[in-house]
Image (spheres, rainbow, N blue to C red):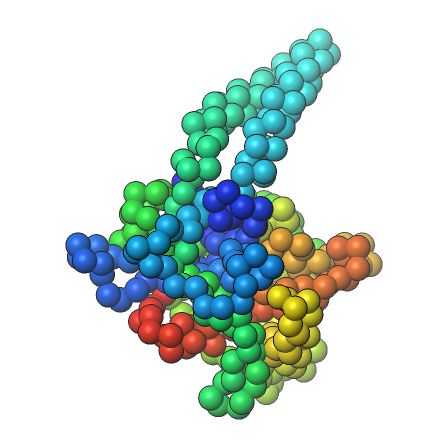
Length: 349
């Protein structure tokens, strides 16, 4: 299965939907001396407050595992149902193109149809959820607010660790790297041209390598997230330029706000939480309106900066008609410190 970040995930045999956010390595190997790697995501994506409660979850060897699959089952089945329809449309377009004496166009659409047919045959092999299990839920703290040691800020602990199984991804666990799918360089550049970014932002051609952006093993410090550069004159240059990938919108560009946001979460297991979050707005325009930096179902995604450093994990968002959008995230530096405080010695892969 794909080892790129941003892939949709779900607890097997459930309706949950989340995203694979970030790979981090546990420094202690398992009993057989093999490396252990976990995927970081949002707790609410893998543990429903309504059915699982808010209490701490810790995997016990004596208890059945909460297995996690790549691509939720409803999404997988809908894709399989849709593929034959698209193949038929491509074949019809190819036939019409041939009738109009446009052989190159006909050949192109027949080639697309052939590839989709092959994809459908391959996907049939993994139609059952069990065949797409890539790990199990290892740990998630109680869904509650914690306090930073430095400034006393309250923030919502909404993270979970999924331990990866060996031989389930393109790369072995020892060779796994954090990378996000970027698509073709042309599509990236087209998105970039519509972005409202400062001239100092890194040109995306420098970021993309073999259709992917490979993340550095470096975290953007929280101080940098919330402190505007002293020499910034333009308002946009006072914000950190950030990037996100999801399967629906592809790459999206945003601006991290240096002002800390206070977010109220209501109706979570019958409780209300007040949490300090990192706010991000879109940097990409559609006509005269901003396109959304994130959309529904994006929680758990990794946010990186123009230097390919890990910045945050997307937790929530709000918007109007998918256009005017505000995204909230937790800084990864804060999350890693909290994970270590819960007894897991971790580092970025």
